[in-house]
Every structure is written in C-alpha cells, then in structure tokens.
Length: 589
Image (cartoon, rainbow, N blue to C red; front, side):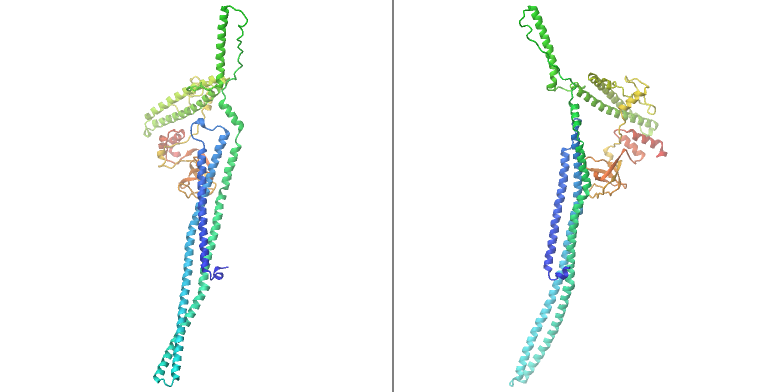
C-alpha cells in the first residue's frame, strides 16, 4: 500500500506526519545521550569507589593479612574490571548508536526538506496552470457576452426602418469583430483547458505519487534505523555479559576463599606473647606473732624476715601483673627486647629476611661490577676499570655491614628461641654467608664455615644457597630513555575479543591477534601493548590473555645493550652476559 495512490490528496497531513517522526527520532537521540552519560558516570563512580576503599600503598605493617581482607580486595579488583566493562558499554553506545543517530537525523531532515520542496513546486505549477485556464475561461465568457450585445444591437438597427444604412453597416461590422474575438477566446480557453487537464493528470498520477513514495521510503528507513538502534543498545550490553559474568564469578570465588580458622590463627600468631599464665599468689599469714610471747631480738628478727618475704613476694607479683596492664610506651630497642618473646621472635625473623634480600642484592651488584671490571681490563677501549673501584669498595663495605647486622640479629633470634625451647630449629649465626671474592669470577667460588673460615664441606655451600634463592631479575632503564627508545616486551598476549581502540591512546585489535606486552596493568584495567608493526597503545586487560616472560627481551644492538647496562641501577648479571657474548663472539650474533 503506497501513500501516492491512497493519500493523493493528503499532502499537508503527510508533511505533519513526517515532521512528527523526526521529532520522535530527536527525542530518542536525547534518551540515548542521557543513557550514555549515566553509563559513563556509573563507571566513573565505581572507579572512585574502588580507589577509595582499595588498599593503600603505605607501610608493610598495614598490609592485609586476613583472608576476608584479601577477599574484599579481590572483590574490589573484580568491581574495577566490571567498571571497565561499563566503560566499554558507554563507548559502544557513543560510537555505534548515539553518533549514528545524530548523523542520520541530520541527513533525514535534509532529505525530507528536499522532497517537500519538490512537492510544493509541483503544486505551484498546477495552480499556475489552473489560473491561466480560469483567466482564458473568463475572457471567453466576456467576449461571448459582448458578442451577444453586438448581435442584439445589429438586429435592432436592422429591423428599425428609421435607422440609416450607415448605422446598420457599422453595427454589422461591430458584430463581426466581436464574433471574431469570441472565437479567439474560445480557442485560447480550449487550449488552456486541455493543457490544465493534462498537467493535472500528470500531477496526480505521476509527480505527486513519486514524491509521496519518496517520503514514505524516508519514513520507513527512519523506522528501520530506530529498530537497529534499539538492537544496538541491547547488543552493547550482551557483548560484555560474558566478561561481567567472569567478574561476578571472581567475586563469588573471593567470597568462598574466606577462611575463618586461618584468620583466627593469624590473630593468635600476631598477639601471642609467649609468657606462661601467672601462678597462684602465696598466702601471707600476718597472724604468726599473735598470742605468743617472744623476745625483742626474735621479734625484730621475725619482722626483718617478714619484710624480706614481703619484698620478695611483692616484687614477684609485680613481675606477673604487667602482662595484663598497659604496655610501656618507652623507646623501642634495636633487638626488640621491649616486646614479648613470641612477638620479638617474629620481628627478628622479619628483619633477618629483609636483610637477607638486601644482602643478596649487594652480592649480585658486586658480581656485576667485578665482571664489568674484567671486561674493561680485557678491552680498555670500552671503559676505565679504575673508575669502578670506588663503587666496588662501597659495595664490599655494604656487604660487610649487612653480614654483621644479619649475624647480630640471628644471635638475638637464637637467644629468643633457646629461651622458648626452639633453639634446635635454627642454624648458628653467620653460617650461610659466602665471603666475597674480588678477582676470581670464573672459577668455583669459595666457601666458608660458620665462624668465617674457608671450608670445602659442600653441605655448608648447599645451606648457603638455600638461604639465598636466586631472585627474579628484570632489566630496568632510566626514565630519560623511555621517550627515545621503545619499551622492551615483557611478554605477549592474545586478544580474546575485538576492540575498536577509537579513543586517543588506545590500540585496536581483532579477535585472536597476538600482541607484545610492554607494560602490565597498574590497577586501572588497561595494559600497554605493541603490534607487530610497532604501533603501541592501551587495551582492556579483560579482553586479552597475557603470558609474561621470565626476562624481558629486547632487539637492541650490542652498543645499545652496553649503553643500557651502564645506566641500569641494578646492573643485572643476565644483561652483562649477553653483552660479553655480543662483543667477544660476534659470529653468534
């Protein structure tokens, strides 16, 4: 059913209907814009909520230890990912629905305006043809009336015997003139009438039906576009449902990981003092000198004895009662002797672990400096080995200080454990350190006994290596070179879902694409990646499957490796080994 055949005389109503359809489209566009603002605001508020209640990067003493704290922070992480999905929904609505609606509304207005102008022009042309036909009709009518008057005048003069022949001839000529003019008007009227009928038929059978058809097509396309937008909103939500379900599953898993028994054990371990419960108070009999007669000397001796007993008893009771009183607010001592035995043991063990980590770092730095010194001595053009002596001396001094601190704290720890019956579980102080060597780096490193002397017993070396596991090494560069050279890849990832990457700083990817990971997620839900062509940007962490490498590999030249090594704060041994291979074995490059 077409508007051109059924609504051929409803041009004004069609104009009003199409205008109402555009108004409704603009109303729906405003709805989508408000929905977009709500999604963006919701995601932003969720981000702020996670940031507000998330763990603060402060001292280690405030780190969460209880399972319910860890579970809550896992819930916050999942909520942060959920907020990222709401941002994805907002981005989809903004680009694929709202932006498309704004563009289509503008085009629809221009198209409707063109069709209506064409219809008005056709209507004006038909009105002009009707006016021309009506004017010719009126003219023909006037000429006919004038001809009738001329004929009546001629007949009157012709029947009048008193009229002169000249008057009769004049009336006859006037009649002939009017008759001729009436005939011309008749012919003109007939031509205009025929032309109007032809234009009118053409107007209502061809021109206006085509215009109405165009307006009908425009209106139907508007309806289809709105249907697509309805579906687009739903699709934007449905595409993120799998990831949102994963976030919800993560929250449920976090809730299941809460262990009340473990938390109770942590409370015991945190506040256990190690003291025995206080014993019974002795009975003090003050009635011993009643109803008996004693000498002054014996009485005096008995008083002195009672004073001694009272002093001993009172001092003993004070020593027990402090457990239930307030703790001393004095300054903390280096050996944590102000703490109860169990808490002192934990503090000492924690401090020893921290010192061991620092000790291992200094050992690695010492080995790196010594290897660099060997490289400089073999290849003087690469650098002056003498410039490394101050740094080597400083490192050796730090190692000696740390060794002394560890031995001192281990001695205190052994003292505490012996007092609590745990002395057999500890090694003697200083039994795990290796004496630093300064020149021989390619032979077997020396071993020393617990007292510091050299030993060939491999069991001592085994214990030493167990105490200092090989740390995870990573290459770190100064910030000033990050703008000049591309960041090294620390792993790779595979896209689980497609991502447009239309915002500034983001990187588009398609499903299944493999990218290099150059920077991990810092808690904001985005990971920095690089494509095979070198293009870099941020992608949603929840959209990719990340596999990190044990050590970042760079495709820099040997000179760049050496330059970065000199600027590395940790002077990693792995990078130095690569440098030596590049410079001394160019055939393997």
